[in-house]
Amino acid sequence: MSGVLSKLKRNSSGGAKPDKAEFPLRDSADPRILYVLSNRARRVSLKVKAAERQVHVIVPNLRAFAQAQAFAQTQRDWIDVQLEGLPPPQPFVPGEDILFQGDLYRLVSPPGKGRAKIDRAGRRIIVPSPDPESFAGRVRRLLIREARAELEAATHHYASELGKRVGKVSVRDQASRWGSAITRQGEGHISYSWRLICAPPDILEYVCAHECAHLVEANHSAAFWAVCEQLFPETKRAKRWLTKHGGDLHAVGADV
Image 1 (cartoon, rainbow, N blue to C red):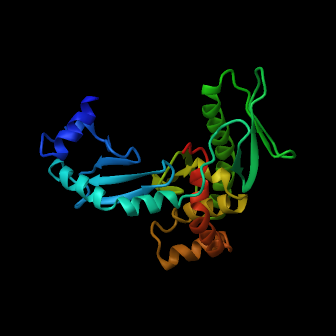
Image 2 (cartoon, rainbow, N blue to C red):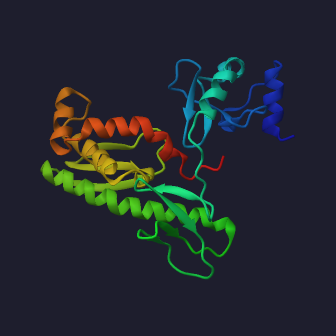
């Protein structure tokens, strides 16, 4: 048994607490549960991480670890319901279908070398790979590349509509937000989830308009939503789509 799991088991029976450096810790009885130490938290809580298809148990301090373990045990039925209710995973495996710009595309791994590409006419994502182990990483990099191109174009368009300048557009694997925006030295810095490339193009456009509106109103006030709807009149419809289908986007690339 590993040292981490040994400490977990000892702690559950009143033994030594794990060290701070050992977090995040996987639950010894249920690998879907991850204990995360957060000094900003005031109490033990649960957060469903759809992108990772797991539940984070937020632990405010080391003294609360035993309490967090006990709480996770009492919430096991709730955890089962939440995780089993997630959309089916769409793993990066040759022959499987994944969402790309709102449609299902078949993943294809032809023999030999070559550049990964999108066959829009045939709805295929073609990713040559020298071995099965590298295929998923190559698919992810292709999607990030496609996402960056679309997000940068839309962001600069909407920023120019507002007379604002965006100095940096980042594309990351953000699990909790579709985008975030800050202003530094008079120019915007905006970060997006690469998973937006899996959504219909107008939904990606909405998120870009939303984040650019934050360059004018750094809040979610009525004034902010007025700017957002000025840029993207279908704001309410796009918001509803993300609420309903956001889990489908997080299923892209999930293995289990």
